[in-house]
View 1 (tube, one colour):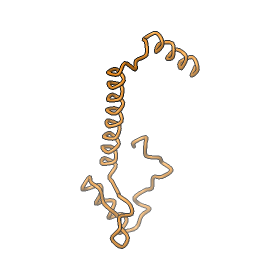
View 2 (cartoon, helix red, strand yellow):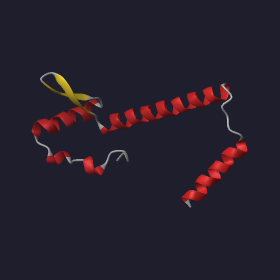
View 3 (tube, helix red, strand yellow):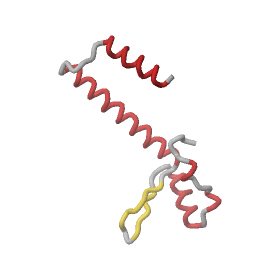
View 4 (cartoon, helix red, strand yellow):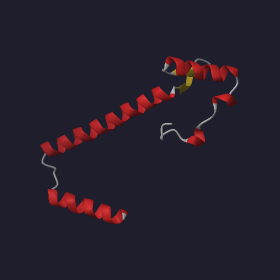
Length: 98
């Protein structure tokens, strides 16, 4: 199971009744979103575990790309930190965790 899916918010498919279980089976089979609505207004989206993992991986890649873009901009504008300062800061973090 994906570590981001909290067991406290996980439910056995066996505990759900017919229509709900069928919606979950549909999301799993199609490996895509099932939109749940009330009066035609979207309220929630049901995803398979695979689709959720893919969405999380995409979000992780986007966050990493933003960090890389920011770092490249900082290098371009001269906002850099000398190597010895970085090593000293890393040493402080390591010693604080130990």
